[in-house]
Length: 446
Image: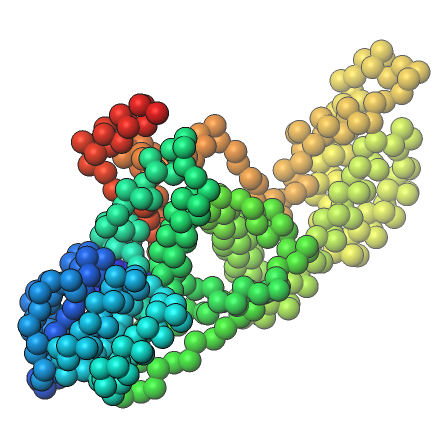
């Protein structure tokens, strides 16, 4: 199973706190001691993921808020983890002027603009601290992970992007643009953090590339990791599955994929069964494909002859019938179904009254329908399971995250039963009961 969102964000934070280098595993060396400086946004991101003990193990001896009163520690490097706001940039520039730390590793939660970088550069030049600003990184971590597969966009100023804020009747276009920019920025950071967790790459020009899974088998110690194979697929009009489901909701697509897999596996099992019966276990797929094509052709030949034999008002003479039978037998057809129909037709003549065969003649299609209802099992024996029927049920599958009970409960329980699939939940904010009622009352007052 691929890493969860919590694991991905935790790994990104640990890398950042190790001066943006991968942490060393199974080492007895002492970590480099440093100070962590964060704002409220950074504090909210780190708190659910790393405990004080874990921070200490990484080498964080002190963690302080950016806008608190801080004493100089000139012989210790400082790692900053803050939003790129005007207020935060001004305080970082003040720290540079005051020479608070030995070196500065600036990590911005979201992407910092060029103008703000220029402000930092000017402050560093003025304070003669250019060499002390060691690294500047955009971390793209502007979301808060609460569980393995659940996150919220923010905790600070969450009322600015709340459902209430979005649906205020007097909201201005500029306010709505600001809300959308905040939400989009957090979602972009979320997908950047997922990175290689996503199995699809370069969905580009109607072509998608997928990395093939190498399975759970680990590489031997010291061996180079196996290179993942990539397969590319063209999403064209000839792709019936893509055309049918490209606009479908994800749960419906997942269900359709499962149905396609079940159909394929059923057909594969049937082919294996036929191979076993015919003693062809060791044959290649080409031989089986040829066998399937020949079987279909022979079956069609017998189906067509039976239609002719049943519906013709003037049945063929015995001599003609023998010639037809000989030709079919020479082609390898099984005529047991013809013998059955011949006997059945004889019994029908004996039981029928003269009124049944008036001047209007026999009704071919009605008679053919009766034959298909009673005798088709003899005709289709051996190929009836090659095509799987689609069964419809009255109970439609309904996936709703709000459902705590029911046949399928919720999407998380649904995916647990399907190995390799994962559902990620995200929201702008989470409510307890009191907060939810307060939100409803505010909406009701508008």
